[in-house]
Image (cartoon, helix red, strand yellow):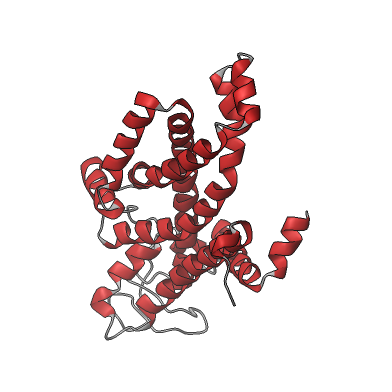
Amino acid sequence: MSIVKTLFKERTFAVGFGIVVCLFFLGLAAPLVSPYPAQGMGETVPSPCSSPAGVCAPTLSHPFGTEVGGRDIMSRIFFGLRTSILVSLLVVSISFVIGLFIGVSAGYFGGWVDELLMRITDVFLSFPHIILALIIVATLGPGLKDVVIALGVTWWPYFARLSRVQALSVKFRPYVQLSKYYGVPSFKVMLGHLIPSSLSPLVIQATLDLGSVVLAEAGLSFLGLGVRPPTADLGRMIFESIDYVTTAWWYPLFPGIFLALLVIGFNLMGDSLRERFEPSLRRSF
């Protein structure tokens, strides 16, 4: 409890947490808080202005304006936040579990197991994660499930490397060696000693990665390989606004602002956690 109080006393964490909580609420409660829920889910309507495409400037009834198909941009953003949050949580959770299992196994068993698992990890790390994700999505096809699989497959090596280092720092400690001496099964030793020691740095890494995953998912959608329309997605909204950048400034602006806020919120939280739990990385001023 004291750790939580300490974190909230740090301005960086408090600001980041506040941003993330507000955006989480808007995304999860999108059907309730959106002015036009049906449009948020993809329903097209007659153009509310003279634009035949339905791209209209902000008004009292549409504070952020409307996009192609006459859909309310504010409603689409709220539903798009839901997509970004869902994808980021799923990808980081999957990567966390896979990376933790592989890294701890490599560090604990050592020898050929360590060599094999780390070489596999190196193969994945040799590719830029967004390029590898593009290849996987292009093979599987666009869609929410395929985006989660593609990003999950590319993100776990970072967690594997980190958890392996933590496992190596713990495996030779007396209490671990004593457990092995008395014949405690390897799975129980890893579960009881190595995995708990790896959780703190991995949670910090996961918080930082949430923002990166949001950007990666938006990038895939921007390239047309993300979530399929009419599902709302911030990256796809920005992509669809390209043809209207010079004539409809509001179209790319508001989705871009909310995307940036979500990433900034996650990064502020991650930086604060890292400075709090890794003293060597604390600011010197």
